Image (cartoon, rainbow, N blue to C red; front, top):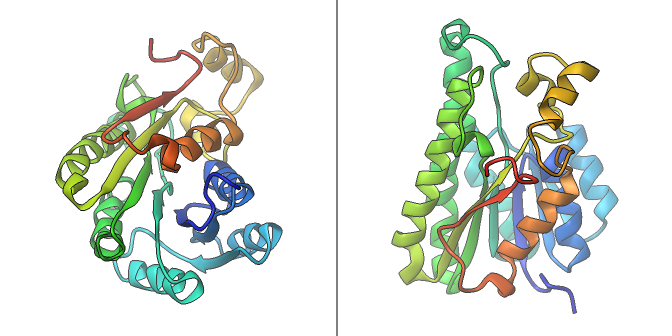
Length: 249
């Protein structure tokens, strides 16, 4: 028996990085997975690697109209949604907060914040009809211990954490649990933006701030996410779980 047997999970940003790690790990534990990403080739690659228990859909989470299609694919393929993972994310490059243009700021808020709202509006009615479910958001240690250089990204992740806690309280009577995970910087496509530049020296600077001495990996995040969406965490809601090697202590 897998820990997610008979569960259907929709994961945004699942074509790479943390999202791909979750998609693969959830499938290993028996879940049927909808791999949603704006990157068509990447989403198709991950779904094909998983096999018949996965389907893919192109989803731009900055667009409200994309969510109905995403949910429709899940319902047509697997007949329900038990787990919704808001994992897609975007950031500006590390640097002066005043140098971030409005277009970039708007995209950060659309992907990191408003997408959670759109997902809730489409998925909560499905979960309520089924008798419950689980919503998980990939937030960040940046929302807990902000540092200079990523101000607008930090703010978006702080919003995501507060939204998680508020949603958890409001949706608890519907038997819908809502949690988020707060990874430290990891080996993903956004790492260079987080650091400002990807150099050995900059990587060492980031590693030196993490007590366990390394960056996070997709598997680290996937294992934490797996527990939070599994029935083992049935009494856990409203939590912002730090997966950070001690970074936020």
